Length: 494
Image 1 (spheres, rainbow, N blue to C red):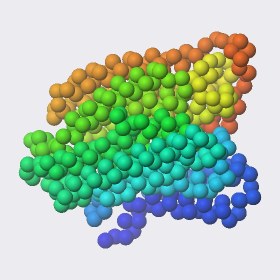
Image 2 (image 1 turned 135 degrees about the horizontal axis):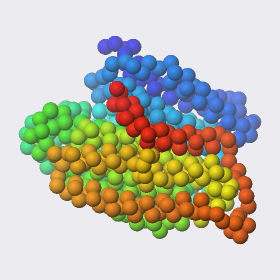
Image 3 (image 1 turned 45 degrees about the vertical axis):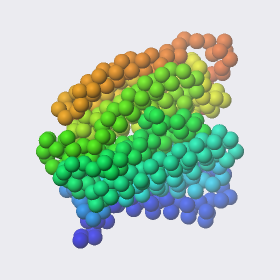
Image 4 (image 1 turned 90 degrees about the horizontal axis):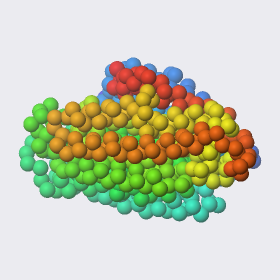
């Protein structure tokens, strides 16, 4: 085995894990007497420089590398996806400076970086045990991060709910993986697929797939497994909420796309369309989850008055849209889902940053607080409009092409069930409903309203670095909306 090749294949994970240990050591050894703000600033600078230098020095043009025994895949496309995860992680860390919530700054940064390591593992692995390990490294870190604001009861409640629901889902997924291993005798996804294609699918394999699917539905906050999501978004600090909404969902969909396309789709691995009939019933399960997510997410978002909970329920609906693409079960559909997940993650980071500014300025995250934002800060109002319209799927923003690619891939899929057509139609109708509640916020932000009459003082206290991250996210959504092929090329590694 070429150990240099192996090291290169896992270099992003190694660098990020080493950085987690470094920031923890630096903080505990030298920064304990510093103020919280100064410690956060220095550690953010250290993380940005370290990950930036690592990305510059990293060779991203190598041929795809595989470690068969670990089911590990490293390619330029996967490396770019990990780079996006690193960038979103940095954005979450910088966003933590918008609020004061802990004296344990080093531990907070280390946990966030370890969660990023778990997310990166999910992008490369095709091994059931390694996939579960990455998911738990990500999830266990997030449970603690959600409850990190010790002086806030809402944070502790959110962390407890997240932990309890997450523990049940992890046990469910692990049980599903064990049943799948018992039915096939394999742990690598390609070999699992070949065993499923070799003969009639045993009931124990079907049960394993369904249990694992239920665990995945929790990770991506798909209905009816979404109950933890609004509380986690609302109770977590801005940085932690941004990480959950962006990195966690992006990595979970990256793994789910691999599992459904490589592991549970014999036709995709064997190259024989006739083997599609061997797919155990995960398509029906995710069709139900997609329908429930689209309906519940959009209807619940309509009724929300708090912006964080609004983002959470909107995210449930977006999880449903992405599941429509996975049901199509083609390689193009898998890349379309990744495109959707990336654009959604970037928009979610921007929206959580907006919620942090809103809370600092108004004292709460009530959606009504957006009234008159155009008078306070044209820049933030325009960026808010970009994020919301991209989530709504308005051209020429990236969110429009995300929906277009996913729905087109679903309709073009020859092996998809006939119900996919009606699922796409329902998604389009639901998108029209979503357009209403997105435009409601845009209208309030651009409303020519007298701030004194509304009881609001002018001014928008936001750190310049937060504004910079918001601007970068908005610019990416516009750029990848104008040139969507560039993002698809990055994800494909071409």
